[in-house]
Amino acid sequence: MERLISKKIVLRFGFFLLLALFVSSVNAGSKDTIEKKFNVQPGGKLLLESDKGSVEISTTDRDVVEVTVYKDSRWGDDDDLKDFEVRFNQRGNDVEIIGEFLRKSSGFFGNRHNKIRIRYVIVVPREYNIEAKTSGGSIEVEDIKGDVFCKTSGGSLNFGDIKGEVTGRTSGGSITLDGCEGNAEIKTSGGSISIGDVNGEVTAKTSGGSISIDRAKGSVYARTSGGSIRVDEVFGSIDASTSGGSVRAKIAEQPKDDCRLSTSGGSVIVYLASDIKVDLDAHTSGGRVRTEFPVTVRGTIKRNSLDAKINGGGPEMYLRTSGGNVEIKEL
Image (cartoon, rainbow, N blue to C red; front, top):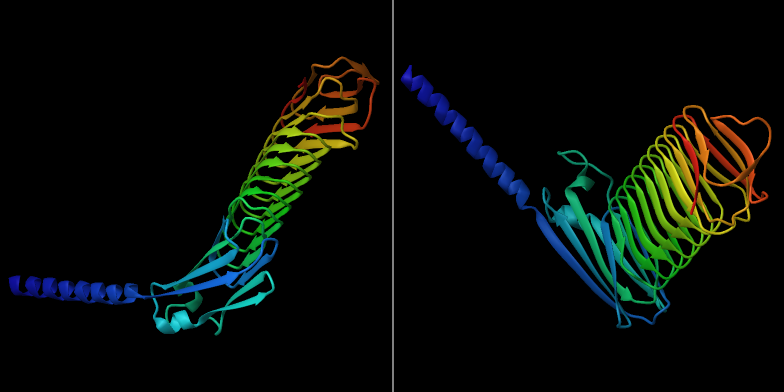
């Protein structure tokens, strides 16, 4: 009996030893680094399009674009690294980078593309335009003077203070923007959106997160199906709607166009500068309508709706909720 138990222990030890050696050999993997440098003048453009990889873009005072590509195949070998090719091209002050897989996905462990990790670390002049697209990774762009367009199918987007227009799109991550001088168009299908100071118009859309905007000099268009919306200061018109949270906005100047704030699952709170003129159309199915402004009421006064003019009337202020209160406060 003791001999049988001893034999089982030896077999188990041998099995785990072989497994450890196998995992160690697999994890050893392979690595490769590509470094390129291009002399350019400010005002050019970086064009990056990659089948995979995270992207980090920072700036320098020098007239140069420096690119470092880290290729890491933790569970593969040199052949897997060679399967991902990176090509470079320079046209005047523009630099183009293309990263792509040479073979279709295959392999004993499933998708061979999943074995490889790609990371782009790029330095550009402080005044430069960016167009970056990746099918699998996050993108980060530090403070820069120029227009920025970034798109990823599987990661977050993070932008610093951009002295130009910003377009950011992702299918699976959150988006942050410290601020920009031009318009901002921000869209994600699976994350929250956080925007700082925008000296232009803002378009923000998400199917699964909250939206927060500190300040917009132009109009705001915000949509989410699964979170709250907060706009601390808007100087133009606003159209904000959510199906799963509250809506809160502060309107600092007289809007030229109609404004709409609506939700199916929370309260609606709007702050207006004291001299703003609007035609108020407010209604709730699950709460009350309250206002701090003296109003001229049209029709019957009801606790859950208010059809009135503020400061003599102006563009329409449409406020709706099915599950909370509507409040109109003085800014």
